[in-house]
Amino acid sequence: MYLRIEKGSAVPISRQIADQVATLCASGSIKPGDRLPSVRELARELAVNQNTVLRVYERLCGEGLLEMRHGQGTFVTGRMSKARMAAHRTRLVDELRQIVRQATGLGLSPEELHELLGEAMNGEVTAARAAD
Image (cartoon, rainbow, N blue to C red):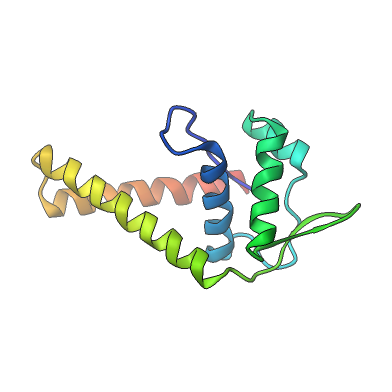
C-alpha cells in the first residue's frame, strides 16, 4: 500500500493517512477483503507513531470502511459511508480551489493549469505502479 506523508503540511498526519486509505478504497486500488499492513508495519514505513496509525484504523473502522479482526489484522470492508465520501469530495474541491487561486496568481492560463494537473496525475499513477 503506497501512502505519502507530508510532515510539513498543515494537514494533520492522521488525516493524511485516513484520507489516503479512503481514496485507495474508493479507487479500487485496495479492495474489500484486502488486509492492510499492521499498525506496527505502517507506522514504521511512514516513520510515524504507532498510536497515530491505530487511531486512524479505529476511526475508519467506526466509519465502516475497515474491520479489525482480533489476531488476524485489519481488512477493507468496502463500505464507505456517504458522509465520508461527501466530506472527502468537499475537501478535494476546496484544495482544488486553492490550487486554482495559486495558478491564477502566478498568471497561468486554464490550459497551462490543465497541463500541470495532467502531469501531476501521471506522476501519481507512475508512483503508485512502482510501489505495487
